[in-house]
Image (tube, rainbow, N blue to C red):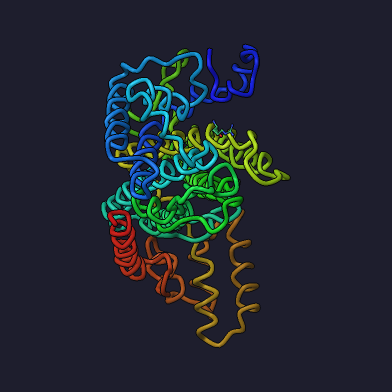
Length: 460
Ligand code: ARG
């Protein structure tokens, strides 16, 4: 078996070394980016006359054939194919002979792998962002169908104040909107071409890194060759953006787990997005939501694990950096799966409006409106808080309801008691960005507008 470095070595590689060292099993999925990078490199070599036109054509056509073979799963991998870069170059040389042996001129796998991965991240992260915006669309349509439904809003998991269901759904939506911003920023940071940095120091050959960067559609080229081959900040950025997205998905997951329980009964999950129990016939389980909660842990692990890999690495390329791909690929695969499943689950679930309203209409949830009624009459807020708190306490464990107690208090009276009727409290939330129907109507329009802007950015 021939290695890339057989000129300098006497024997072959040990099996145990190969088993540890080879990355083909996972970096194969970058084959398109690897071939794209090689095409641009070869075109550049011809432009600066390091290779002639016939050699360029021979290599380009060998690259086409190689791509075709891999995509049709006809490519025969050899034991010597350590990674995708080695495999492609080996095949190109088999097909194009001496011309193929010129492909790697002025290039190292160090700048090559960084190029491939940056191209891969740019495409993948944009696709994932598109799935996030699809999910936002679903939240919008559920918010619209929820019409005038409201539910208890919670703090400390205790009922606090009623909020419009649309408001609650859009609260998740805004978090996802920030996720899209972060993902696009990660894609933007990946948008720098490292090709031409060579192993670490550039080249004595008249390479043209600017031309290659432009050919590959990058925003620009590296400024420093050492940085170009050792920088994996873009991987860490992407992992962080994906992880925070995963954390947001876990929060919506947790709520749906609670809301679909018998105790809450706020939502009914569609059968297609629920599972049953192997033993208990009555069970309907929210596995999708639980996996959204659970897989956030895996994403956090990838992010922190990779930061640990980077920590303390000296310049420039070290094989440790090969550890960038598996966590990144898995984080992307995981978030894709989650987004598709959660989108389906949220899009098909039905809300139990009556159950939500029934809980939200607990008169205690309007206690703050009584206090604010007194404030409007000139009572200092602290005093008002004590008065109303006393009434709530009195109503508990007494025959008299809060409505009756409030009606018979001359500072409050029937006008204030009317604030406790079902549905009144949520309508009182009128301030900008607040939870009542009026501001929520405005918010929905703002949300749609920002989503549209993001979708336009994704089409760029
Ligand atoms: N498979 C390697 C990686 O993923 C490619 C770069 C190898 N470079 C080297 N000098 N051995 O990082």
